[in-house]
Length: 172
Image 1 (cartoon, rainbow, N blue to C red):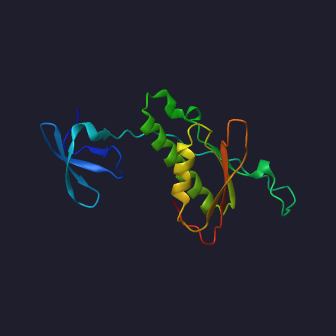
Image 2 (cartoon, rainbow, N blue to C red):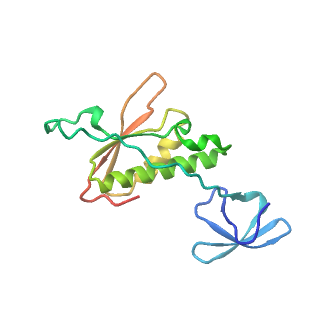
């Protein structure tokens, strides 16, 4: 099931851990800071990497005259519904899907921070709100980011605008 040298994650924990040895139903792992931990086998999770490809963003038409008003069509958007990724061909657990969605979100934000984009639209879906709340907690405490609900339907809010103050924002 697991092998020495394999990189894993632990349920309800953040970070990556490298397996040093396996003893009955315990794994001896080292975290990214060099600390040795003993964890039960049932708390270890294999890490799978997916090639999600490049994030595609709509380019703004440069021929339009500049105005102070932001047109909703010109705002770069990212749809985080898992069905829109190429990775859905692979049978992925809920945790793996969530990890892919968050990594894609961070890459999208960082790409637009480099382009000095001041507003992006993230479509996270209504669902149980787990993805939206995780995105919000990722941005919370970081200077230069402000998140607001974008649209409201009978089922709730399924998208959010993120305003970026490029002069003070740091990459995620």
